Length: 291
Image (cartoon, rainbow, N blue to C red; front, side, top):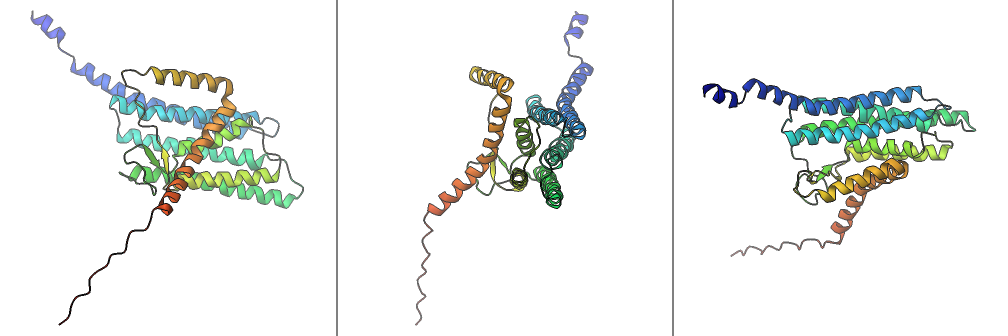
């Protein structure tokens, strides 16, 4: 009887090992995030005007990194294994994957490998301006991460509904996703005209601004994967995976731009609603009577 009672008791050492294993699980997704970013950087370095498909590979790697980044945080919350080490590791990985890699991709695809224009000096200036815009994108992403790490209850300038339903500013994975989606939409083929390069310059700068802004963006944190009837969610995810497999270029391009402009839409909607609201009535105070 004593042996059976002893065998039925849980082993504390085994429980501790299982807990340690659960803590490693989110870090594995973070490691995959960092590995995808490193691979994207290598592909950008291998790209030339004739082997531009390396840029498409880099964009695809950044897309997988966005998936890994979303999974590591959700897995940590579902298993209750969130830790300060995991948050710091995730931030460092995000700087590499969603800061350095897309900045290099944006500059190489939009400016460095662009066909030379008629004016050589203008081509050099445009390349330099592209390098500045790409660096500003990197700096904005790093600043966005720093603000996110030190802010406990960030409030957007156009608050909307309270809670964690919205991010304050575009998150850096979404900013990197916009860069990668545009490059993937073009299959990595570099730009061929100076006016498209100027448009790309403005877009890279705009994405950087949205990351450091206080505008609100949907966070998708209110989606409950642990609901009792997740049939609709499973069907939706299956349809999304199938659509990405067969129509990845236009679909990811549309999704990235829609998410980017969603923050602009909510900001403009809040501004117009604020203008339509009548100003508060003035406060009248009765003059004090003097004898």
